[in-house]
Amino acid sequence: MAGTQLDPTSNDPVVAAHVDTAEVPSAAWGWSGEAPRTFRFAGWFFAAFLLLMMIGNHSGKVEDLFLIGFAGAIVFVLVRDMVVRRKPR
Image 1 (cartoon, rainbow, N blue to C red):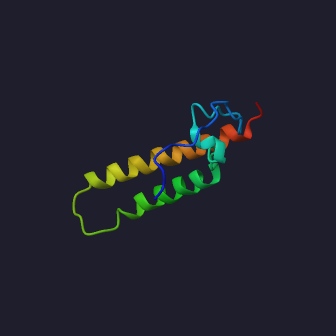
Image 2 (image 1 turned 120 degrees about the vertical axis):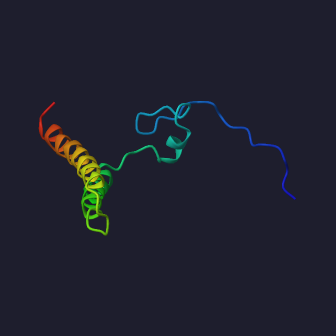
């Protein structure tokens, strides 16, 4: 049977990707990065998915307006991200 005592750990911050492990404990394992290509792909996928949801058996157009609005907002954010990434800092 395993003991109930915890192993002592050091409280020294480990610098992993410029993140303090006291604030982000998973940074010690290297899980603190971002996946910008994945987020961009997901954004385009869900914008297209929202527009494809307009095809269906509903008769009202209010749903279509909301779907177009949310898809347009996602596309606006994605295009803005593309423009900001191209500009030199």
